[in-house]
Image (cartoon, rainbow, N blue to C red; front, side, top):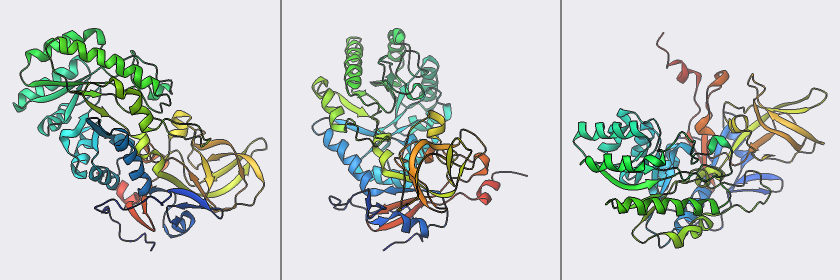
Amino acid sequence: MVTAQGISTKLPNEMRHRKNIMSFHYKEGYLYCEKLRVKDIQEQVPYSPFYLYSLAQLETNYTAYQKALAGIDSIIGYAIKANNNLALLKRLSALGSGAVLVSGNELQMSLAAGFDLRRTILNGNGKTLEELRLAVEHGVLINIDSEFDLAHIQETAKSLDQPANVLIRINPDVDPQVHPYVSTGMKNSKFGIRNERLNWFLNEIRKDQLLNLVGVHCHLGSTIKKVRIFRDATEIMLAFIRGIQAEGFSPRYLNIGGGLGIDYERTGEEIPTPSDLIDSIRDLLPKEITLIIEPGRSLVGNTSVFVNRVTGVKTNGNKHFIVTDGSMSELIRPSLYDAYQHIQFIEPIEGAVETYDIVGPVCESADFLGKARALPTPHEGAGLVVYDAGAYCHAMSSNYNLKMRPPEYLVDGDTFTCIRRVETLDDYLRLFDV
């Protein structure tokens, strides 16, 4: 059964047996998502471009972290900023995930998705009083990021006359060897306290009866491909914990953040698995410590493809272009980070192979989905996908050039469901009070 009707965010209550279900794979020249041919879905969906997700892949990714953490008291805190689709959040909540938040609206979404807020963490270097009020009211773990952030947390707890459970965000100053825009744990980062001021923070917390120091936090960055980086950071963070214990505190949580990369290049590169990550630090962890990890990209990145139609092919004499209906407005990672995401057609294409830039219709030279890709020359209307589009793709989409944010569909075996309808111009016009 294949249906795109009856938009719904309701998902199965129990995980079904998925051992033999492949997420994205080719058969007879056509791309399939689980048991469905993506071309058939494209012909039924009334809007292009769109995002297409595999539920089997999402569950497989989460299970990999569960297995890796066996025997360790831990919290898997899904980073909602990676992808905030409510249907996906509900599925992760049902699987037992916690949540990592960077805004008050993400906190509200985690409530709607059914997350246990005692297993959620509020990060951020500029948390507002309103956001902190929500967090304290719901018992969320809150990271202290600076002197003013501590003052705001203290003000909030006092106004509510309610305790706040806090962690201190420390920068281990370990180079994650990633794009500077997604490096977050170096000494010069905008995140975290000045480590040399740690004792000042401990003294301030000690004097405030409404603050409970429950742990420490770090986050190295994103797209990390070497687990030694996590081990180095864990050793440094445990040294800080020992120093904090010497000051009379009993921190329970060690939050080492997220950051595992995925195989965007599709070259067969050996990318560390969740087990590789956890096994690299397992022997370091004291029994009394609860480990928190914050995977986002590695949980949802490979669960989705961004499905486009070819508008046409052109050349300027020196370069060849495939023009698609998808653009930087719907998927900005290549333009923003010069990031590589694999691109392929969803159907057999017989044209001559050329080296193409794949570009969209937005009025910017930065509007590209991929550059210098050797692809067969497609016919107008051919289906084309950008792989590994589940993380930081739809979540970062915009209305630039008045492009409407695209719909999202979820495949579950042999069915697909709309889990987010397309934004319309009428939706956009309702925002204006004129």
